[in-house]
Structures are given as structure tokens and as C-alpha cells.
Image (cartoon, rainbow, N blue to C red; front, top):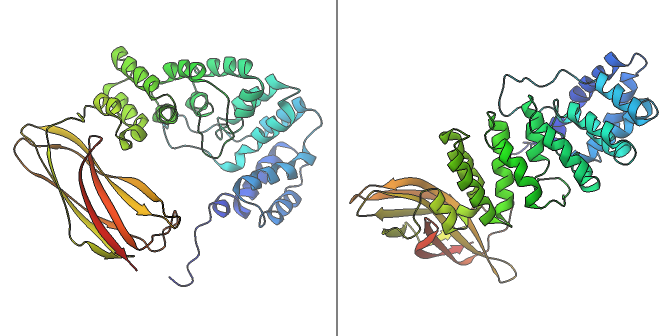
Length: 375
């Protein structure tokens, strides 16, 4: 629509209102703090900076107002922190990005010269905003000492602190620098966290495991099987965690992961695939119908895989979820999907020409069809 502006996450998170709130917190704790000057300086530097760069810029603007020496800096930052996040909640309470500043200062000024005081600061700060980005430099620089601290934090009464133990050590944490930790170092921490009562923590554990499935899938499955045998976690939550942890493996059709979830890759099934049309214009929908029959009740995970030609002449494939269900004995399960073939897809451009769709059931390709995409 003409005149419609695209949503800007960086402007949503960092703007006059949020920086004004942060300045007010500093002013309440530090009598000599010039909130007006700080706010003006920070906002003036935003237009040419991206989201994470804005966080560093806020810290740049704040540093002249901090006392000399890291212990004094940390004390001042703790004095200005808002109350901890609400512990009556158990999920989706990430905090505000403006409260990431103590983590930046901890890395800049405490990493080398005052490690333990910096970790203390991260412990306090993560109760207001997750310090998952800022614990990672300490894991790389001081792995033994930092892991020892995380081991203590795994028993914290605060679920934000417990979540940091899992999230901060994730192998493939989005937006974050890499950490050089083997699964042997992190899996014992997850053993202690998998039975957590907070979904915020167990989601992080599942995401951590999903990261690990990309390098050591057998280790992940062995851990999940062990947890099922322990019964430390409720069956419902452990089932959710298992499905979430194995989602990449399921998309890839990994038989061991599917069997753990109760889906037989070799189940006796008849699968049909039909397309409403085999010539489709870019911008229209690919209308798909899938039918499944079996002689007995059969749990299924049904995905479909689209194969797209690229400008370089190669073929790209992408897997999409269709349905998780049960095929009733001697009854047809019919599934339909209208897949929009967007002309303005942000991930990659569609190219006219032959395309293919495959239906994957419990990790096995069971049916195929071709269609032509036309401009």
C-alpha cells in the first residue's frame, strides 16, 4: 500500500521514549547525571546505526558519566537498575534492550582486569535483560571460571539466571559471537535444567539441543532418551521439549529422531499427491492435495519439499510443514495446502521454469509432482 512504512525493530526498541526512560533511571540513581544532555546525544547518533550498534552507542554516551575503575562502575550501574523482572511469570519476559548496557560495560572494562566482579554484574543485569550476548566473551576468555559460575547459577531461584546458563552457552545463538565449547562442557548443565518449571528455561534447553543436532545428533537423542527414562520433568513438557529440540532433524527426515517422537519412517502407507494446476504464474498459489491411507491407525508428520531453480543454474530446496496427525485405519486422511509463490519473496527470487514438489511422510519421500512456474 502506498505510503505504508515498513516496521523498524531498531526504532521500536530505541527511540525518544525508551532512551528517556533509561535516562530517568540513571538520573534517579545519580544526582549529578545530566539526563537531558545524555538523551539528546544518544538520539543524535541513532540514524546512522543499526540495532546492535545503537546499544554500543548508548554505552559510549554513558561512559563519561560513570566513575573511574570497574568496581565503581559496576556499583553505579547496579544502583541504577530497575526492579528485577516479574518472577510470577514463567515465559516471554525478555526485558528491554535498553537494559543491555551493563553487559557491554562488563565486557569492555571487566573482562580482563576484574572478571569476578564483571560476572557479578552480569548476574544482576540478567534479571532485567538477558545477558546471553555478554557472557560469551567470558566463556571464551575464562572458560573454566565462567563455567564454574554458570554451574552455580543453574541452581538459582531466579529463572532468568537459570535460562542464561543454557542460552548463553548455545552453540548457534542468533546475533551472538561464537563460543568454543564442546558438548561435553554444556550437556551437564542442560541435564540440570531440563526439568525446570519455567517454559522460558525449557525452551532455551530445547533450542540449545536443536543447535547441537546440527553437529552431534546422536548425542542429543541419547540425552533425550535418558531424560525420558528419568521422569524428572512432566511427560507433557518433556514431549514438547523433545519435539522442539528435534525440529531440524524432523525436517531433515532423520529416522532416529522420528522414531523417538513416535513416527515410524517405514510405516505402511499409500500416499497420493495432486496439483490443481501444473502451470502457475509467479504471485499465484500452488494448490496441493495429499491423501494418505493405512491399514491401521498410523501417526504421521507430513511435510512438503519445494525445489526451486536458481539464477546460477543450481537447485534450491526448502521444506515446509503440512500436518502432524494420525491416519485412521482404512480411512482416507486428506490434506490440502495453498502455497503462495510470492513475487517479492525476501529470501530468494523465483525464476520461471520447471519446479518440483515432494511429499515427505515420517521422513520418507512418498510422492512427487512437477509444475511450471511462468512469469
